[in-house]
Image: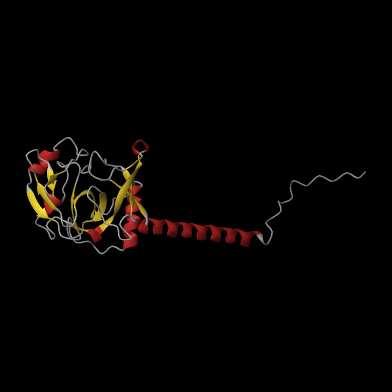
Length: 236
């Protein structure tokens, strides 16, 4: 029986085969391609279907709190559907609630909004979240003897309002407006802390927002975990 000689530990380890380097480069290229595809799909979903938003103010408390992360259904008003009274919507307030925009590319806007939603950076300054109180053709007035807003002569039951300055804040700014077709009268749930249609009566549109500027309907609170829930749309 012949003994097998032990390997010489001083010998260099065998190097990679000639095909190993091209295989690694191919693997890296394939990983980069899949990452690019995933990014494109992510941006497409955010641009056309569901987009996260970070709540930056207390104007919608207690429904939405500062630093809540919400998911906005961007398909809610496609295919012939329109915003309804009581819906909580995100809209672009350029020219109505805010100064004219800077011409930011739509995909860049989506990316900035999404990055802000995960806690990095600030959301676009011209995006607002409010509740629809009146739609085209509605007469919205403030207020009856109990401080309630009336739509077409009927007082609203708004049990979602913040207890601090609800009807009192509304009655401090009396108004009587007929909403034009294709536009919306919107207000925050925290009436004492919300700058909304009441505060823009002198701007183009008389404080109303074009339906075409609505980005989508807020349907879910996704963060923090203690706040996970489907959002309540509609008047109480």
